[in-house]
Amino acid sequence: MRLIVGLGNPGQKYERNRHNVGFMAADAIFRRHASFTPWRARFQSEVSEGILDGQKVLLIKPQTYMNESGRAVGEAARFFKIAPADICVIYDELDLPPGKLRMKQGGGHGGHNGIRSISAHVGPDFRRLRIGIGHPGSKDRVTHWVLGDFAKADNAWLEPMLDAIAAEAGLIASGQDAQFANRLHLALEPARPKAAKTPKPGPAKAAKDKPADQDTRPAGTGVEGPKPGGPFADALKKLFGSKGSD
Image 1 (cartoon, rainbow, N blue to C red):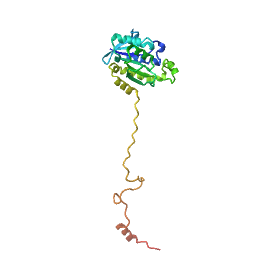
Image 2 (spheres, one colour; image 1 turned 180 degrees about the vertical axis):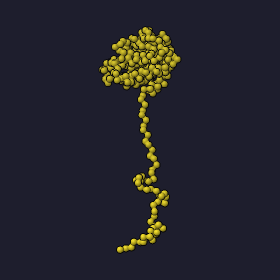
Image 3 (tube, helix red, strand yellow; image 1 turned 30 degrees about the vertical axis):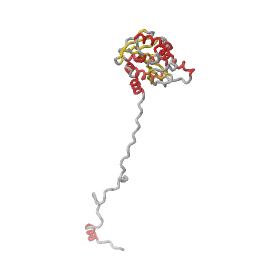
Image 4 (cartoon, rainbow, N blue to C red; image 1 turned 60 degrees about the horizontal axis):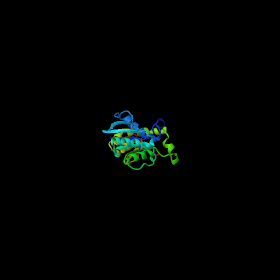
């Protein structure tokens, strides 16, 4: 059994909060894969069971509020005897630019209360998918920022990112974190435009272009006009005589 956890706060007023992007990712996985059962209440959470990449997966959205997420995750992990390495938690990250993703295993909580709570209940060695939401710029604005809704303009990166996470979730279930990160990078990073090729110079011309009405035929070739002198000119002289000087 694998455990994929999306973090957030329960209730309609929190649905579009930046802090709830983990819930959004869990919902996207649920919608994408027909194998998942309908959501039901269990382990102080909403849970759904399904198959991803041949692995049995419990998708979970803790309903304990963010700061107590560890109670729900710990209860589910103990019931199914799931090791920390088989748990992946998806959550928001202030220290990443909006839309940037990072996968890692283990580490500290970085000031995130949901991660702090989970670490207290199952230890720090679980896997993490961090989704960047950006930083408001000053510490005193953080609470308002994370509990504020995503702007409409954020949908330009948010929806494609959630779709990509859902499409590649099988790699999370099978523990292929590096491949998962690479697939998302390829799916979400815009392709760099190729540099225009500079045309190679052609061979130099042997001569400059001539005006269209200039005859460029070599002497002695083609049709030539009558030359001065010759038998025809001599016959004219005999007939008319040569013109003398006055």
